[in-house]
Amino acid sequence: MEIKQNNNRWRRRVVVFTILMAFVQISKAAEPVKLVFDTDMGNDIDDALALAVIHALQDRGECELLAVTVSKQNPYAASFVDAVNTYYGHPDLPVGRVKDGMTPKPGKYVKGVVDSKNDKGKPLYPFDLEPDSEAPEAVALLRKTLAAQPDHSVVLLVVGFSTNVVRLMDSKADEYSPLSGVELISKKIKLLSMMAGSFGFEPEGPGKERIEYNVKVDIPSAKKVIENWPGELVMSPWYLGKSIQIPAVSLERDYGHSGPNPVQHAYRLWGKMPYDRPCYDLTSVLYAVRPDRDYFALTLPGMVKVSQEGRTFFQGDNKGNTRVMLANEEQQIRVREAFVFLCSQPPLRNRK
View 1 (spheres, rainbow, N blue to C red):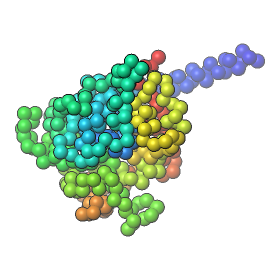
View 2: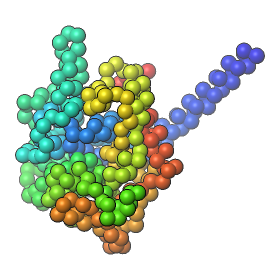
View 3: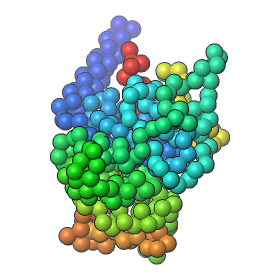
View 4: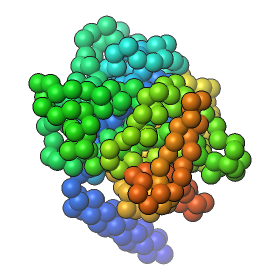
């Protein structure tokens, strides 16, 4: 009987392994999505897990992260990004800082993670981009990165303020490209995947639209980008991320496989554990890389208007370039499960 049970266990493991290998081969068969990630890292905590998901998908061969630009003014934000990139095995990934941007305070976690030391007095999470060091200016890095890529190949993933993006739109010809910002965007970017806004689809209904944070902090920039983006725009609204939460049990138990983890550390600094946390920014990441996996539904094309107070309103229009993400209960469950596994996936350099 014991031999038979062992054989059955072995067969199940073989089946699981075969399925996983098939999934990996399917993932590798598609061309990796070229990503540029613009984040207000250091304000809400979900930006940290969004970056972890990007690295997990990159390790699977599903995307290529070209650069990260930071729309939060605090210098520790870029250092934290560099520490996370280094942890996941990409220490040379370019990181750009906003100039004269918004929200200068460090927030609850970026400085704490960057300043953490091991028992030898060295950084617990190695990084090269010191808070007081020079770093590429965000718009210059965006132009340089886009100019070097094939036409219509880049997905711009924006999960913070629109400060860097509107400045990219307004930018002029430079050493990297003779094109204006709008021309460069139209030539190189195939999709803007953006976490922003609240459209009255939530249970409170129309007329109860909240002023969503990413829009509220820099309303003029958000208004110009959302209303005048020259290509395809897919927006993940506040209530979608609110309905999909990373469970505390995963944050507490699934991240100890590779020693101290800067993302898990950040969640501990953000609030007293245990707590579940919404996946606002992660939804835009998942759509950007896996748009055809039926994780989400989309509205028909339309236009979005941003009020002077920062409220966002969607109106269907078959000539529009914007769609809003939705998810039913079954999709929410699938997305949550995907996030649990992707967020806690060990860095490729540490897998055995």
